[in-house]
Length: 303
Image (cartoon, rainbow, N blue to C red):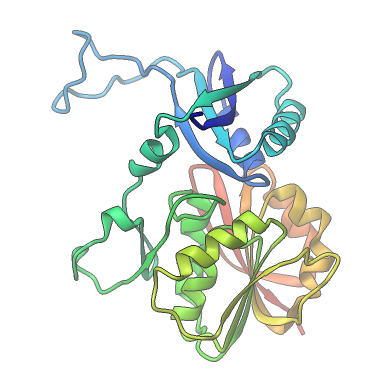
């Protein structure tokens, strides 16, 4: 019997921010792959021509996604969360025939530059000095968990991390996902790095990707809920979560940052930044990045 994938088919008449909100909700779950099925508006003449100037004001593009999950339970939990966040979105639960759909959709991912790092899937490893500037390559197998470097929040976290002096520091990566931020910190010389996630599949993915890289022995991945079983505080804490989780767990996260330590936050958009900053009132904002309406912050703990 051929394998099928439990999936959600999501539809909206126009994007109008729906894509960003759906992406934010999905960060709490573990899609195997996402396929964008929306038809893009064509230029005059009806065919795409890379030399043709873009349409000045293209019509709104409808949202039409297929989102595959590893099991029906995760699919149904994600569907309920999306329905709460976007009650007007049409959501259909289906089982898609395999036909290598997930693998083919992931194969479209290419290497990306983020700060001092190039994040690359195994099928798109860059040759030495391909980008003209020395960079550290991290190989990620995009299978389970977010954080491959292809989302704006992960890229911004890597950029902020690249600017810090991580040598000999202790680092916590909360909601590690694919483990890319943990691996970046370890490669920058951190004395101890702990990647934490509540999801066993995410940790399995992180450990699988870690085996594709030559990493120091300082990195560990742990299945745990930092709110129920807090790890030891660290000099640098990374939390690429959601705005809701950051605000509701602010006290737990703040307690994990050592005095005068650094905190890198992302996973929220420009409408949430005020609430996030208010939740971390004992910290001073040092740097802010913005990309595609997503925000990343570097905060410094006062005392």
